[in-house]
Structures are given as C-alpha cells and as structure tokens.
Length: 429
Image (cartoon, rainbow, N blue to C red; front, top):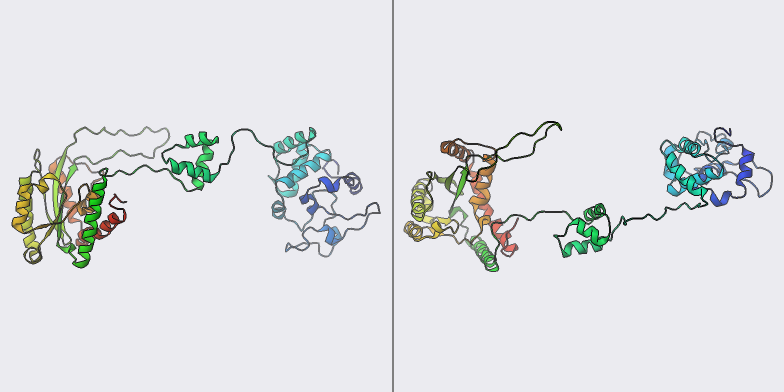
C-alpha cells in the first residue's frame, strides 16, 4: 500500500489529526470525508458523512451498502458515486494546488503525486513539471497557493482609455499605442478587437470636394427628388458617357501553389496600354446607340454634337412618343465637349432638356455606377489582339443584358440622390 501511494487508515488518521482542517483543500474534503470524535474511538462512517454527492442526481451503485461508499482512507477515494467528469468540475486551480500541498506534506515525490492525481481525476489533470515547481516552492517554506506577480509589461489595458486614444487619432499605429500604454503589442491588438475596432484603408473617391461643391450636390439632389415626387420623369431620361476599353484586362493576383513550386510570371503593365474608347447612349427602355472612336481620334464638341444627332435618329425609331410628345431629358456630366456651344445649340435644336448635374459626381451618373460597373466585371481577365476583338466583346456584353438591366440603373437614381442628401453632399458608399 505504501509503495502505491496509499497509507493505512490508522496511520493516515494519526498524520492528519493535527493539521487536517488547516491545509486540506475543499476538493479533497469533498472526496474524502470521515467522522471521528476529538479523541474517542473510531466510529463507523455513515453514508451521509461519506458520500460527497449524497443529495445530487449522480447515481451510485452502493445504495445497499452505504458503509462501502467513501470508505477509502486516501485523499483519492474510489467512491463510485463520483465520475471523473464530476470531479474535474469540482476542482479549480487552487484546489489542485491544495492537493499538491497535501501530497508534499505526506512526503511523496512529484512523479508519485502526479500519478495519484491523474488516476483519481483523469489523465491531464496534473502535469509533473508543474508539480515539481510547486514542490520546490513548498521546500522554501512558501506554502501560499496564490499566483505570484509576474514581471514585465501588464497583459491587460483599460478599454475606455484605449478607445479614447484611438478615437483621438485614428491614424495611430498599434505599436505606438503599445508604447504609450506600456503594454505588449499583442495586448493592444486583442483589446482593439474587444472594443470593436478594425483597421480599414480610406476609400478612393473621385475628387476632394470643397464645401461649395458639397452644397451644390446637396441642392441638385434635393431638387431632383422633389421634382420627381411631383412629376415623375425617370422614363424620359436619356443618359450617356464614354469609357476606355483596354486590350489587356488581366490583373496580377495571388495563386495557391505548393510551397516548393515557383510562381508564374506576369508581364509588367506598359505605361501607355492599347485601348479604344466607346460612347454609349441608353434609357430605362434599353440601349439606344453606341460607337467607337478610331485610333488617334478624340471627343470634341463637334464630334459630340454629331453623336447626339445619330442617337436622336435612333431614338425616334425606338421611342417616337418620347421624342414628339414628352420630350427627352439628357443626363450627362460636365466634361468640356458636353457643355460647349456646339453641343448646346444641337440640344436646343432637337428640343432636349438637360438635367442639372453637379460637378465631380460620377456616383450620380447611371452609366458610371451601373453599366460600366458590370462591363468591368465582364471584361475582367479578357485579352484582345485588336480593336475589332474589343468591339465584339462589348457587343456581346450589351446583347446579354435584358431591358430590366437598364431600367434598374435608371431607377437607382432616386436612392442615390437621397443618399447624397443624407450625407450633406459628401460622397457615399
């Protein structure tokens, strides 16, 4: 019995009598209880004193023999009423350390103590190196079961203080915050997650708007919302814009490869890539007209006026009622050819109304935020050898779109005008 870490009932009783109540842990007392008088003869243990889970829902196989339950004289009893899972739930770090102290007082070795604890409470409950560390501490006369204060930087920070630092300067780095608070960098990162802060790059915007430009965006958007509310006009809008289509639309991207496998080669983009410009005209009813510029050709006011004339002829065939009765409303940006005198004369000649549009506002143009967005996705990864290939790809794109595609883009104007008003004229997501 002594070789296996167990002692007899009488010897255990003699050794524990002076100091049992002072250094035996709560977990040990729960799992090993016996009754004895102050100096009287040994009494037969009762089930109510012996079984630490007498009133619990844990079943016991010794109901008929209560004297057998809890009768083991060791701090590690063989009580069948306790499962290993129940015992582990009953223990915390201090209780385990109290058992370390008990075993140390009994004169046992660290390896023997580890084996006894793991046999009683399940594998992994105690680690031999941990037991050795505590036994070394007990040998020095220190029987405290509390953790010692550790040196180095603190592992916790005040979240309110951290929030104040970040909100005062959102551009500060985590290492600067760690140095200011005298904590570890990983501690700052962990607490930033706790308070819901994440690192985000600024979003690219078309232009840095001035206050006057923001006010203009606000005024135009609010007036158009009011006008459409009183007299809906979205079905009268004809909109247009120009876009460069690159011959090479590939983009370098990361690939999943084996660790030893070399990455593939990707050509560096040239400074002036080959491209062709397309001009597209459309309305909520569908596509009206599109054309490509010849190599070396640019958009001028005369060229733009010619485009308007060609578009109007096609519009008369597609939507004659719009041209003759309601009157089309042109929505385009403020590029120089669009506001030049020849363009204005042509629009006045054809009876077109020009819808107000604030400067530097591509987010309020349906061609930019809707058609070109889907066109970019369609062209992604494609490579063309000549202009004809690019034109064929664009034609394939427009033929793949339904009438609802164009109506959706025009109808989004209302929500975008409203977002512009809600943001006081600033760019919105």
